[in-house]
Image (cartoon, rainbow, N blue to C red; front, side, top):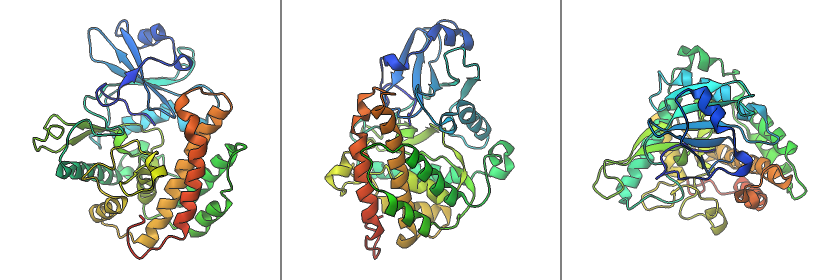
Amino acid sequence: MTAAGPDAGNPAGAVRAEDAFAVDAVAGWIGRGPIAEVRQFGGGASNLTYLLRYDDGPDLVLRRPPAGVKAASAHDMGREYRVQEALAPVFPFVPRLVGHCEDTSVIGTEFYVMEKVEGTILRQDLPGPMPPEQVSQLCEQAVQVLVALHGVDVAGVPALAALGKGEGYVGRQVRGWTARFQAAVTDDTGDWSDVARWLVEHQPSDVAQVLVHNDFRLDNLVLDLDGGAHDGAGAPARVVAVLDWEMATVGDPLMDLGGALAYWVQADDDEVFQLFRRQPTTAPGMWTRAEVVQRYAALAGREVTPAQWRFYEVFGLFRLAVIAQQIWYRYAHGQTTNPAFAVLGPAVGYLEQRCRGLLTAPLDTWGGA
């Protein structure tokens, strides 16, 4: 889950020793001459992302899987590349691609390269002062882009249509993420059986078959802030690219929205959940999760009640817990030494309690959504 973009919005640091690769070999494969410097974007917890700097040309971004045990389907560089390649002609928010290397002898894994998208990527806090009305406009922009993605004519793009497996996406997701969780259990894993059982018993039918991003977050958007949104001049931020397409597929749009809002920590959430925040979603003017759902429903022409939404919210948090547990498994078994992952074991325990609380939360208002 890494966003590749400009240094100002997504600062790149030194390459971690465990994530180093043969730079000269990559330079030879690209064929643009020597790479002056390589930096690593630090936000990645799945595929790894690097900035390739050149002295005499535009910078590039390289994506590759991490070392260690990994699920091949979650780190398929060729698939991620082909999704963007097929989507680019019909969705104007895809980075410009350079090429995909299938030859694992170059750096030990497949990888692909794209041009760096100029703009700002939001991290934990806003990059500067933004009036609440401009922050609200940013939320509107993000929801509009997600609705546009879900509106892509998948049937008209054979390479995208091929991603679909037909009806039953919700059920496949429940079964698949439950199996992933079971495969990543560690000695400190809590008892999720009641949550998993509830998801099985309450899963709805698919509402549609659309292209879903499956990791749609503010920190996977590149923004143009040059219009003044960052200095109070009044111009709204503009989304210029959507990044990190590794889990994109054809599926249910409300499952995509639920997954996105699992990361959306709002200002009135409890102190522990505030520690999860990696986006500026508590800033004045940011919408609540309920407001995002309601606006999405209005733009997409779908009715979503609080009772219906509870399933997607619980599943989104369960899915987030599985992702965290998989990374925690790697960390606990010494397959990664990234110190940022040391907190993920307790985080999974918190998400267990949060999911369980939602199962019985009152549904008379949208306050819990």
